[in-house]
Length: 103
Image 1 (cartoon, rainbow, N blue to C red):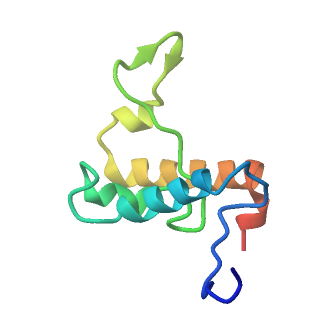
Image 2 (image 1 turned 180 degrees about the horizontal axis):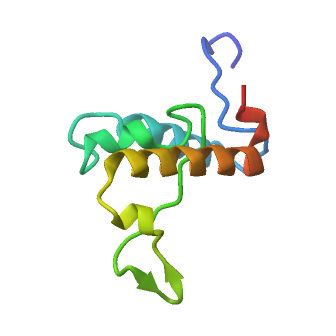
């Protein structure tokens, strides 16, 4: 096999039972970058790792669901405040869950 391999790609530090799951991870990661695959192409810009950070928490409607309230800043319409909140949350989550990503 080594004679025919010209590149190695790692999907993480773990062992899988076969090559299929790793292949699917790579296929998914590449195909979603093709035009028209995602509903909103701009969503790639804010995803985890796009800025070296994990992604900020996601919320949807209604404003309160199962006792969890969408933060007021996200309902405010203030795009600069929303961007700040998202950045702060991404930094907080990265520091907590993946401090190895911080530079």
